[in-house]
Length: 94
Image 1 (cartoon, rainbow, N blue to C red):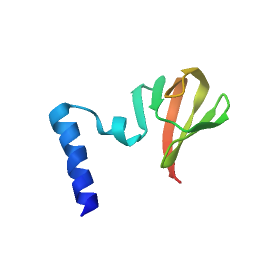
Image 2: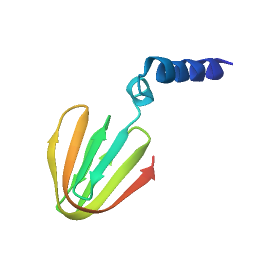
Image 3: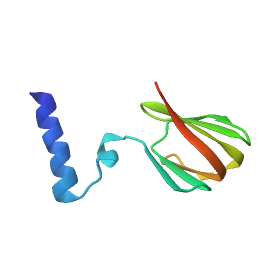
Image 4: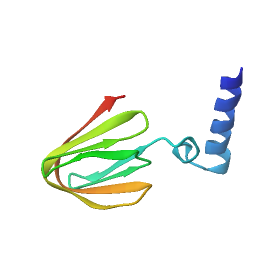
């Protein structure tokens, strides 16, 4: 019963107040704007960075980004931005 009540509260916050679910559940959000730019919000840590591969640990999965000339454009405690020629994005469940 607790789980149903919690899910209803999340739905209410999302639908009626307009707060995105990832804000209050700390889920990660991966935004791909083009083949040259990716933004990842609510990440846990940077695992690996090279010119052709970047691995980012999120709450429930690891994001693998492959391509050419990849680099971390900027990052904060909350968000990381990756630029370069992105050829693939894959996820590994933790």
